[in-house]
Length: 248
Image (tube, rainbow, N blue to C red; front, side, top):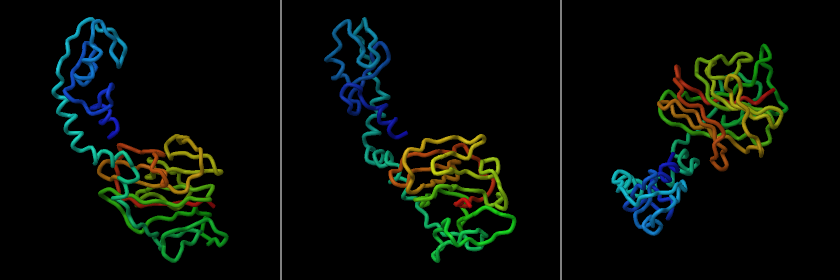
């Protein structure tokens, strides 16, 4: 969004913020000093290559004001272009809920769990649910899950009231917003039906950004901040828990 806004207020000729922007016959905008150099009649629009038969240049005062505003806030916009830097301000210190039954023990600091050799027995062949100890019912929150060297996992958020006792499908209809890996390379989002996602290099970690009021759950590459998948326009009906599911 920030990049799109900057592009909208930049001249296609000089690539700088508009200065005294004017509109030509086809509707495209340029700095007046930039277009003055190519406006001998007839001439082709530098943007769409359409031939203009008149040299009327209409001042675009609204665009000029917008360019000034964007330029004044350029530092903030540049920061927002780097998603990883932006989401770090909402970073949470997530600990695991020690009371939640799961077959893979976490570490003593209750911040991690893995598919190790020492498995605890759970009744009914239940899956390995690891959930955070803190619920989120408002605000923006970001945390990262280390998935390095694991070939099967699910990470995301679930509603506190969601069924965590059986082979529940991880989809929004069941109160889950998640991404999953199967067989080391089948990467997918938990939609109905599932959405296959690009898988080029093994992930070291997954970043999860939750904006409760905006109804957004975003998944990022924890190393470079690139987008993996976004759930949007969500209405949450209950408080939310971070969850991680290493497969049995």
